Image (cartoon, rainbow, N blue to C red; front, top):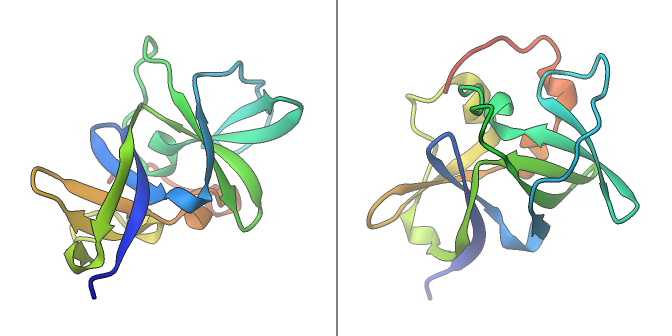
Length: 152
């Protein structure tokens, strides 16, 4: 019997990424962000989600990718991590995909060490690659202190 998993998908700097759908609380449009002085660069700030204060993590910065253009407004993917609920800032939202585990492969050797730590692996779809992110690693802002500008 073929096993599969559901991934909530989104785009970050042209990369097609996904996280386990059962870890996603909701997807919301851009929210006002309060700056946090002295926070790591990957922390865009804090958002107020119906009284719940969440850290907003810029996935472009976390993955070591190019900055989001100033005129591009990010979307929030609110996810549950081992350390609590956070918002991941992404460029655009995809769909929920059911992917076969038979299509799963380990991360390619060509991606940076920073990204490799956050990518469980990839699924080869008919038209593109889907990177499955490790939410807990992506949301670990303590790991970003002193992180260089290494690119994916």
